Amino acid sequence: MRRRDLLCAVAVAACGPAAAPVHDAVPAPRAEIISCVDLPRKEARSHNLSGLAWDDAQHQLLAISDRDRWITPLVPEAGFAGWQLGTSINVEVNIELWDGEAIALAGDRLIIVANETQPAIFSVDRTGHGAQRVELPEFRGIRDNLGLEGLSYTAADGGYVFVVNEQAMEGDGPLSSPSHGTVVRILRHSLDGKPDFAAAYLTDPIFADGPKADNGVRS
Image (cartoon, rainbow, N blue to C red; front, side, top):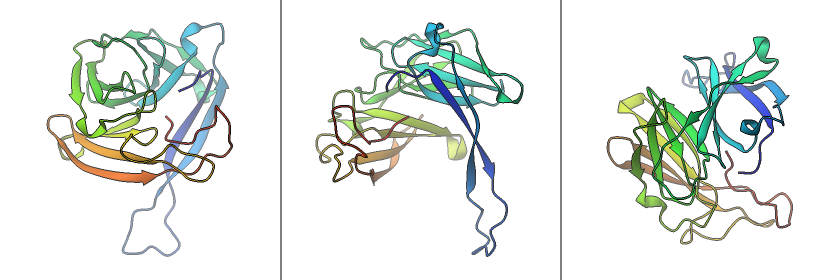
């Protein structure tokens, strides 16, 4: 991902009941922007932020950097009028090149994409230590710097992580263009076992042409 100096926090709230519910379906959640502020540009840790995860227990965001091996807590002020940067967590992961892209909370562990070109995610403890690597062979053929881009975690049914790549892998088709989207994979993987579900997703075409225009999956 590109440099991040602007932070927008999004809350998900339940909608009211639908006018004509079908089969007692649960209403879809509604996304709401609750904060949009400039982070301090003189603070180096506010630059190059990529993935975000909300830590409800600590009432703060955790932001992973795509340039530096750290995760920085972002602590909201009253009414989300501003954000303070907490003490960064240095991440010890045995990889040569760091390109942090995504982060999710899994109980007392943090799940991260530490390099989007590698077909693997990593689990670390809340201090950034004790790294465990989870191989994702389904993502072989990743294009350089266009690989793993987003992830999430659910504790349901024993715990699953969901991972998605940014642009199509070499065997899955072309990159996105102004005339067509790109095919990415959404993978569900048990942290203690193997993947059990994968789906293909076609993104929208690029909204504009040019060397900096792309429209795959972004975190």
